[in-house]
Length: 254
Image (cartoon, rainbow, N blue to C red; front, side, top):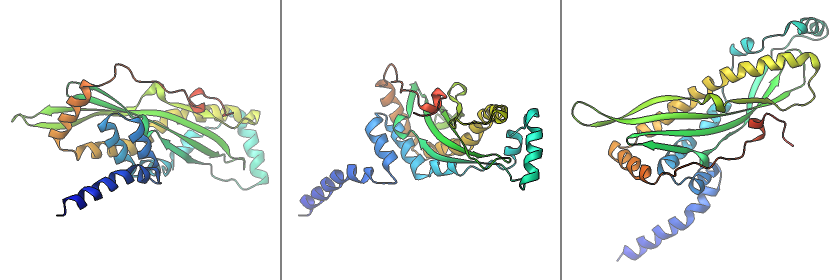
């Protein structure tokens, strides 16, 4: 019969799964499988990887927003004018690099048929000012919180409702990593950092929130209800807090 052969193939497939997960581009999913006890967290992690969430965030274009972000401090006007005499004025630019989404650290919270996901992410920023060829390195950290619940319609059928999806204000940190900053640039960077803390969450939310809604929206509602009930029963009383990164601490890495 074919039954023993099928059993052997299934066993070999299960044995090969950890090895496959360790290979790129699925390293984030491997981390999620090791760290997350929540099935829903693993589903979200797998979906974010499948939809290339990190690449989407890294490819964010600031466009016209950068002109508003890079407000020039009054004391720098003379420096800018003198700089333009010696070199052609270049447009400033900000690029996102080293994007890291914490797939293994997605935290879930449950209350009856309501649940939320907390997703942390961190990335570097490379700023090229319009008046200087030197690249200034910065970093940003934030946690995106998404709320969902199951709601009955007039016929008693449940539908998934997506509530708020935004960056937790207290989680948003932007830090300057470059230590050698000219004195006249410090006010400029201070303004830029404050403005980035306002704008970056909106840009990241616009990429992450629709993806999470799409990932969970594809699940069967009965399956989703079963997962919520199962995980709510075994939800830990508290979540382990990780050590703050260099960006959260607001200091250059050692």
